[in-house]
Image 1 (cartoon, rainbow, N blue to C red):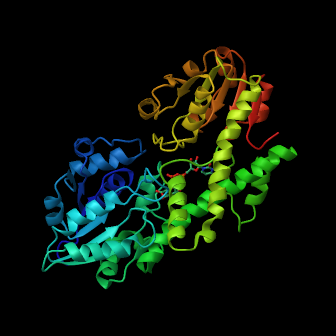
Image 2: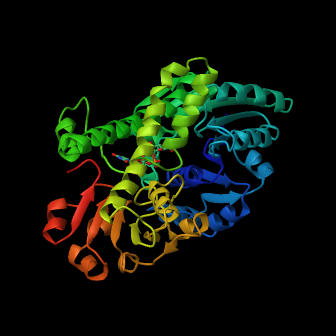
Image 3: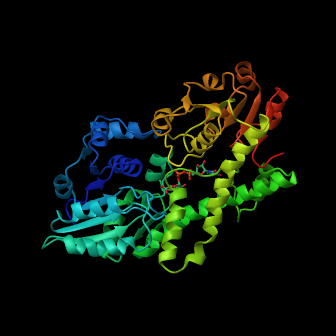
Length: 442
Ligand code: UGA
């Protein structure tokens, strides 16, 4: 691959692809982003990021303006534009099982490979079950036109929503799985700005690269469920899991990150990735190796049920006809993503039990309304809390962490709060007259 190295295409412009496209342009490359969803392409072309990601719109607009970044829905254009193509399409959970749905990845590979000419590189970034890349390589070979010489690599993406720009420009490592020296050389050249910063660069085979991604997410999920299991024990034993986590964190073999007890993990990645990983282990005949992830998932689900129970206990045993305020809808702060959101799971469970639930979130209200049209919504924290008999803090936005207990007390019917994210100072809230309950603390 020579001559056009400064041009790349990015196939799929969701959270991952839009961020990848804008950041590659920011690094100086000419980038063409492709998506089959015309609404996404129109929005991105007009400088609007169709989801909430701090800092991304600025990078997008700057690079649209300087002409390094464009978007299209036309595969012919993308195939002709560059000879390095990043695959960033989604791999959601299948409707009929826990496995990953590879339809988008396969469709993208088919559409692209059949149009490539000469020497070209495809680098997958989507999260896929181990073994997928090997099968895609065969698929590419079958579809490649005569004369095309297509090389496949897999370079998993580790970006966190809410930190997408930072994580893409300065990842903590770059992994490239490939058997092809052409791919390795192309990646080294593309990542030169990052290699200069000393960011570790690991070359592996295809299955190892695929596994790095899912095992990283499995480890993170396990760490969260570990501390949430300790929260369950703490609740039974009258111990304080926050103090416990703090004491554990000083052991740098354990570390303090992802040791935050609370309502547990949600989002479009951790929950579906551990399920797809178990499904794949099953297919590979090593199901027992990952059976612990079933527990990780179960512990995580139990935190949601426990949060509902604590709130119900606080108001005397039944939600029927009771007014409940839910603060938070996004699966985590600094995101408007509500996929598998613990907050909305709890809100709708309480509504199902007869509670009159009003939800407020600084960014995720529109998405929440679409998915959960039967819940009530408010446009501020105080509006949501009006006349509430219990308030639940379920996504730890800064706005909620900094809430003034006296202000909130003025509007609620009863000053009772369930801190589902251990985001508040219990002593402070209790001193202001609140009945305060949290997960894993007395
Ligand atoms: C996760 C990984 O952190 C990324 O490295 C990965 O690239 C990404 O998935 C992906 O596969 O694409 P993300 O889903 O954006 O990123 O969110 P996280 O910041 O990991 O949070 C996941 C969930 O865990 C959230 O619901 C959060 O509230 C929860 N969490 C996190 C806890 O309950 N406790 C903690 O201590 C940390």
